[in-house]
Image (cartoon, rainbow, N blue to C red; front, side, top):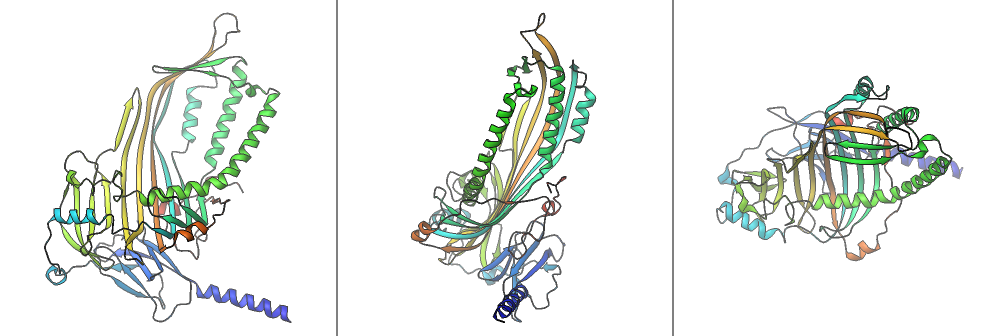
Length: 508
């Protein structure tokens, strides 16, 4: 009887918990243009809040039963704050109205500051307005990598191996994936001082990776196909001379290609090495990601050595006091900026009129950040844009609330290539086989990172020292986007590209 009562209690508690937890989802649109509204703050209470994504979508989970007085408070730069009652809310689209005000009624200051005076006060406040003490940050971090093949051409001029012909090359290029992506998502708590050089500790609560492993499988298939052809035509003791333009290298042939006895030993060694790498990867994921997240949260205008130098080197930019606005109940100066001469960025800074803290920055490069071209190989860093938003913490200082950044690089290769098989043990000419042609590839890589800090709590140095990290942490690999994976957790709602992600092949 007692056992039945215990089971009943557990079941009842589980059911009660599931009913107590509710998730609300919606899309924010401009009431006039019906365009999505990104980076709006959706707040339930002082401890629960999210931000709408680039498509205006948000998802917020409340971990207790909803009361008649409960509401969401939604605010965004340039829009009127609204209150949305949660009782009977049906997740329908929410429209925000643009905000207009009479400046003479709301702007109460002792002095009308010039733009230069505002910037001087902003610089003075960089060391006092922003928190750098020991802090525990509960956060969600997402990294997305996109690769787009803009051009892929190989023109074969000569081949002494019948299977290596233009038709084969064209077929391989045809089945190559032109666009690929991968996404890593982490929910965790980061401990440490909020300064660039400070060591950090992390507890990863949950993590996943959307990754198409079929691209690796395809490369394995290509390698096997090439190896079969090589074994048919290429001699055991040959070597390759590879020439591209002015450059030439010599490449020996791996004897395991021909099934030597030592191949088994080599394979066993490789398997042991792979097992070692897998073990290191479990530890390495945690260390790598905490370093990545900490670097990302500090990669902003506060640091004097950062390339986002428009505050510290304001004399190189042209600033204009264009307007005033509200952000999260703060009255702010709206200050667009652009480079005077050769600097890299343009954008808008939003400065609190009370303490002259920069509470938001939108920025975008106006020219390529770097470029290189030599002998048919070129690279160009053509994109760096993002948004940084700060919020006040319990100490009335500012800490990072949200950050996103996209960077893009274009890589091109256009040059001739010649591969010659030579063998000094064959009578007559050393040259055995030859491939000659031209290659032309253009690839664009786009990296997008997003970070939202749900809660920032001051801790002591002793709290930091006493916290023990878990060693073995790896993300769960997903073959396609699964909306249930983060069910019950507050995250940044994924964009359409992530929701549409699906691997071509599954390991299941």
